[in-house]
Picture: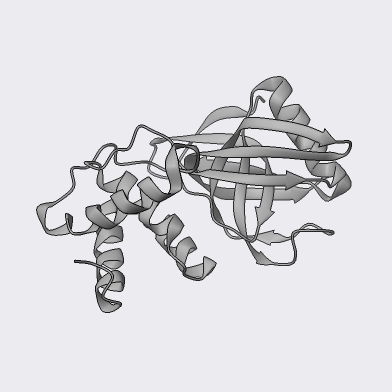
Length: 210
């Protein structure tokens, strides 16, 4: 079986599944986001080399139990596919990459392989597609536009989809100074409009919106 396949859910609908290595981290990657990573453990160097060679993704998940370094950590069930964008190895044994966020997924089953690398069968989660920004949530946009200008195109690459509720929700969430567990809960939400409502209430309570 290849790394991409289809299975059937109990109601008979097709479910997209992947077989991917996992990279549990103390951070949350969102679809469309960028995450710079410094890789030095052999298991992840080998993983990155295989992903670059075969042009395949890996999965980034927030750690639920355990640590980034050493024995395989226990990840949260929902994570984000990551592809390797820019990379460089200025020092032997240390790989610097930029991970680009793709689709969200849910872990179906996982196992710890050689070198403590976690491998998993995952189900790709359905995405609603472009969702127009509702008028009552437009208050979020001036703040996000200021953040985008401050970060620049390298940190927040174009296209900037300020008219897409899902994109806006992901971008606001990833820059908020909140606990990773809160970001994880917002990642797991399937409804982009519900995500925006939560974000607006949070920012309103702290008087961060005009």
